[in-house]
Length: 155
Image (cartoon, rainbow, N blue to C red; front, side, top):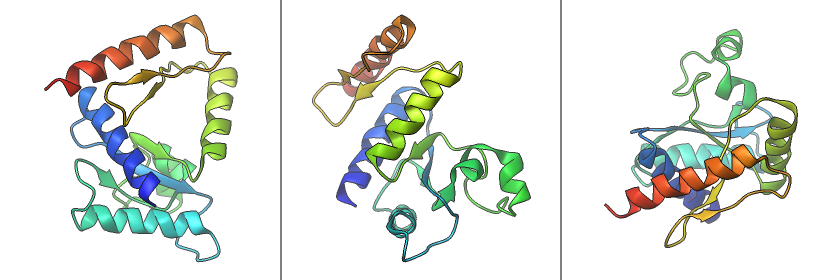
């Protein structure tokens, strides 16, 4: 849980640097309800509660959410999720673990025409973090993103 809170706080800092004043953070899982047999749903619920209690600030957290409900407003409406804080318009997707995040990243970068840049945060300055298979454009975007975040950190 401590790591997930740190990831959210670091990602919110990046969002703020990029002009997203109150990013919507979606901790994703296979389902939209808490199931004790699925620890990531319990974590997502706890993160949302921490946000509601003011323990995690600068963002809105709603979870657990399925990936489709987090990113697709039509799917959210179809599933009856229009009353959720995040219904198809998440700014940040928090994956349950590094495996899920890496798999989705590879699918997006290799099968879709996605524009991306990658940095490591939680450090004194952003660290450019690219995959060996990233395109030249992704590497350039990573440098630009690091510069934007580094400038914001000066303030």
